[in-house]
Image 1 (cartoon, rainbow, N blue to C red):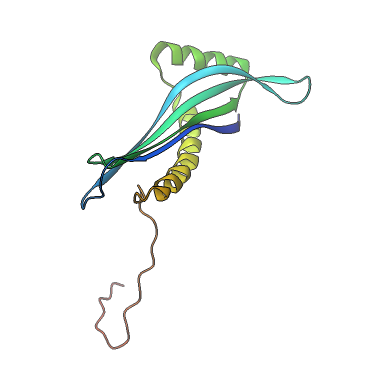
Image 2 (tube, rainbow, N blue to C red; image 1 turned 135 degrees about the vertical axis):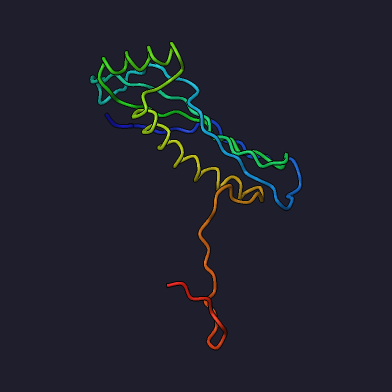
Length: 147
């Protein structure tokens, strides 16, 4: 079943130190909660759903800064799968691999974009490689050819 909503609840970007050569950015995403949520589809129609809380954190090391993006994702499914997912979450804080992939991939894509924007606002470098353009060698200069 589909993801029907993505909402941000918290964004935080802080710079706590000077940029240093060789610093690293480490990022992590975590599902923080799973709750049953009836989703309204019109005036009188509701469907069973799940509300996943998540937190995406980018840490710039050593102690240079941090970006946090937290929010929720609403997911529609049938009553049986919702009950099974809630039971699994309550027992061992795990999701099925298929469901985890769908929820986490949605959160990662949207959170990464937001984290890149927030890090730029406080002059932290991107936490992931950004494509760049390199000039082509000038004519007459020796080139390495790999072909």
